[in-house]
Length: 238
Image (tube, rainbow, N blue to C red; front, side, top):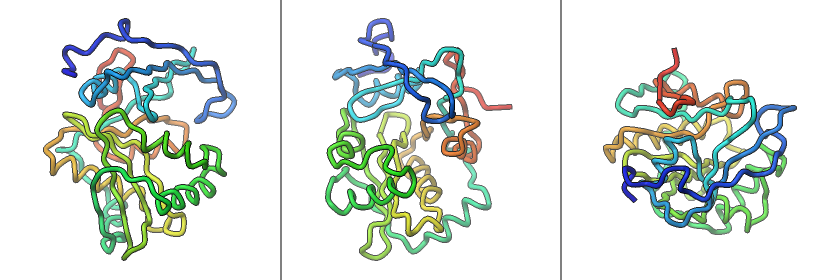
């Protein structure tokens, strides 16, 4: 789908989900706009991301909370990105890893790493069931690639990334908690940015930035970056 000819939001079958506890800010209630649209391809998804949407499995969503605009899409201009000192240290700590990029594969090895990650990081709160795991990360309506990170033969991390015409969009990264001191998440981000450079893509999309949420505000450490305003314009924070 050509982004210029992508349907407007008014033409798409959007529906508002039920209110639920905010996953990022305690004590708040959240709602989302949902889109289940089989016609959306990678170009159309890039257009949707520029309107604040993200993908989860085969559905697209955008936070739409009354009186709150804390969830802000964030992206990095690849050509201008410069790794910080701590990010360069993370790269050095992981120089012994092998990195492979290919089609997403779902197998027992990956599922066991994901399960261990969920149990330590989220107490299983995001779901450990294998079918949920498959729907969440391995059932995609658009072109998706997988970064795998190994120490020798051992799988220690997996990154799921959507490939769009002018960007890579980081979907999710999970890793073996035994290797947390290596900062594998930082290393995976640097690998994704470098792959954008290799492909000549100008943008790396990181999803949603939430200033007051520790699990989401680390994204601002990748500089420079831009935030999507309520008016639909990307701007660099002052």
